[in-house]
Length: 68
Image (cartoon, rainbow, N blue to C red):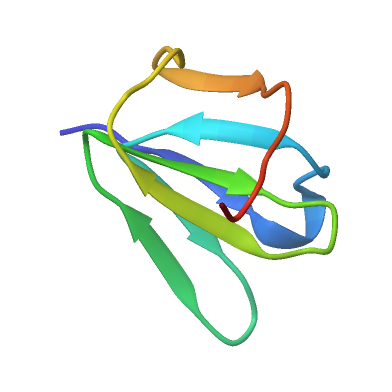
C-alpha cells in the first residue's frame, strides 16, 4: 500500500486528504487509513472522518472543514 506523507506544519487550513495518508509532526504521527479522510481545520486541528464522501485519492481543498 502506498500512502502520501504530509508535514503537518506545512498543511494549509481547509486542506483535506483521502487515506491512506501519513501526517508527521514533531510530537506525533497520524495514520489515516483507507476509507477515512483528514482535514486541517482553520484552528489547526486535524479532523478525521470515516467515509470517502466527495473526496478523491490525494489532496483537495475542501469547501469547509468542520468538527460537526
